[in-house]
Length: 179
Image 1 (cartoon, rainbow, N blue to C red):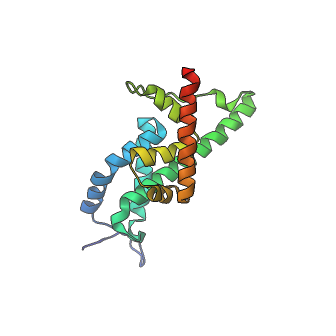
Image 2: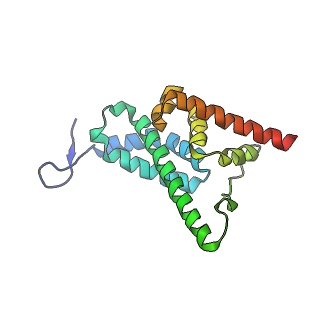
Image 3: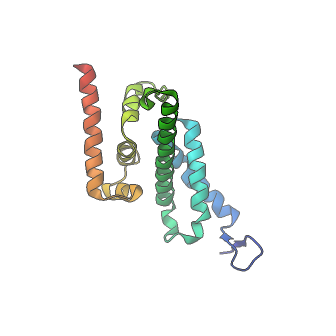
């Protein structure tokens, strides 16, 4: 397999040929965009998240233990970047609320209008980030508990607990509005 040497110095980074990079992009980015959209609820943020994650994963492609597991690495990177972004946003909102004297939970993000599913999107958006991530990975990405645990870097027991708490919170929200 031919490699293209990037850089001039000895020990410089080695990148995959452009054809393989394009193939990785075509094979993995559409599914990654769907995952990121479910995590963020915003197409533009999802695309930014996927591109950042893809660049990070490709940059480390030569160091990956299992090249055939690129999708798992990409998925994990997307979840990690999303979680980091949520932390930054939370800190920014708390700081702004202290400055403005407002409650940070008062501002809600607008959810996309998905016919027939807008209510569930809203409810999913109220869950804590890890609970939302576990539901997306388990039920949308159809990952096993073990794969979800690997993506979130937690134990299988934690995945079970997060899933139970998230579904319980969704059920309670539905019962609260119906009753």
